[in-house]
Length: 310
Image 1: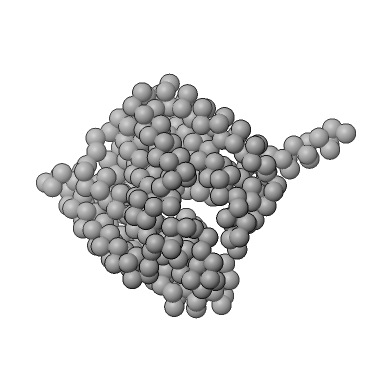
Image 2 (image 1 turned 120 degrees about the horizontal axis):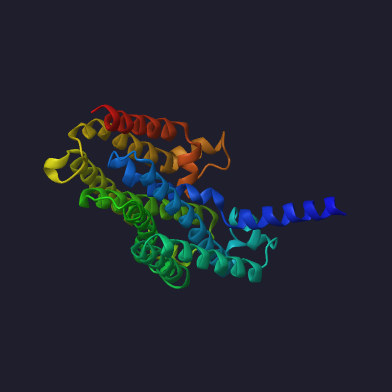
């Protein structure tokens, strides 16, 4: 009897855990960018970043539960999203919303005990994302800015939690790279919708591939320029060391690599060996593409070496 209860609990926990989309938590690693780029390796600073990361896992999961509950009908028509716990019926909407409320309240209580400013950052993140779920995701341009704001607020949360100074070039770079990923996401979704003749998002009807390609070119160029200005060092109000310019090629390679993977012809070639390949989910590319992982590793090693030895 006890064994059955344990197995039942494990099964229930697993489906609720999956509904929280833990694979998306990789986005929250951005909170560590502030201590990393400031070359601050004190244990208390990194511990504060860990707290911010944990809180973002809680509050972002609450948003995902709310979003999936609102989109349950459209998700059931999506080739991949229909397998999500809420869309498939494994998790009820009532249970999902109840867990979302608990996660939201818990995240705000913890952030309040750490810093009032940090509390405001998390509250702003929640309000923007809820507004996105209810309204902004149906508005072109505003939808991609809403997505990008989540990444930018993650970076700001890392700065606030660790009480570190910030560079405007750093924040601009994070914001523009986030816009780049949001545009790539919409581009992949639009292309798939055109291929299948089914628009799973209403906002996709307001976009066109030529428009998204123009936006992609503008944002990718701008993000590379702002990163280069940041990497130039203290003279331009950027990084602590001008040696950070050594990391610039890795950023350029990463942008080129991502654009290659999101290219329609390249996507078709890759689907022959990997049917699930898609640039619809940026976090999956960052986790599973070998070229991107090697580029990130080279970039990260370069930053750590500069931080310790320069």
